[in-house]
Amino acid sequence: MKLDHILVTRENKTIYRYENTVIKVFEEGYSKSLILNEALNQSRVEETGLKIPKILSVGNINGCWSITMDFIPGKTLDQIINDNPDKSDELLELFVDLQIEMHTKTSPMLNKLKDKLVGKIQSIKDLDATTKYELLMRLDSMPKHIKLCHGDFLPSNIIINDSGAYILDWSHATQGNASGDVAITYLKMTLYYPELADKYIKLFCKKSDTALQYVQKWLPIAAALQLLTASEKEKEFLHKWLDVIDYQG
Image 1 (cartoon, helix red, strand yellow):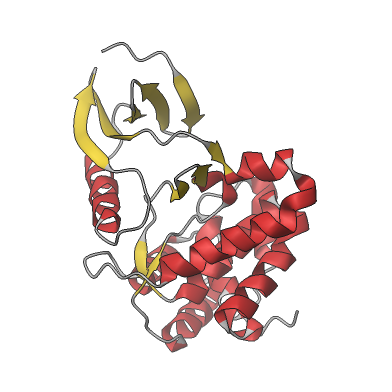
Image 2 (image 1 turned 60 degrees about the vertical axis):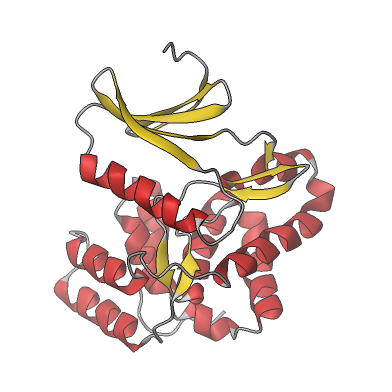
């Protein structure tokens, strides 16, 4: 098998197009358990009936682990927004509707969002013990839900074609509180789509009948989670959200 059609290169992995499939090849030495868990997560999400790429196989290519899945033709929502700035409001409606539909699904075998967040917060070296304690107490007070959560729901992870909208990249999938998932998306939107971020969170709250203040309570927790993979510039931004005093927007 000759892989030479690179779709995207990311940290620790390269994603190729091969005939009617996409092959995600991880760098040598990347954790096998994380790769198998990612494939398992996506397989579980398949069972919800959402439109997503189906896992076809997990294999080994030249000593590197790989995941092969369906190739979904089309354009990302990110590309469509950039090509049609005059339609950004309409496209944002589609984006929010898709996330709300996702949150109606359940996948009981997925890891719980709260459990994941506890482990991540405890592992952050940039935070002192007092801040970690306050974040963990805030997290513990949040209602426990079992909704399907993506963990990286962004326009770049949605493909649009004549058959509809497909959601990509389920490596962070969990079951939990939808507002926690929305808080993660909002903070990433402020970084990558600053002109749409506030419109996004207000539109989500309106369409889902969720109090804006409730989603805002999740923002310090979401900021702490993102510290683990953020660049130095992003860390400066995220630290501003770590004050556990209620944010007033």
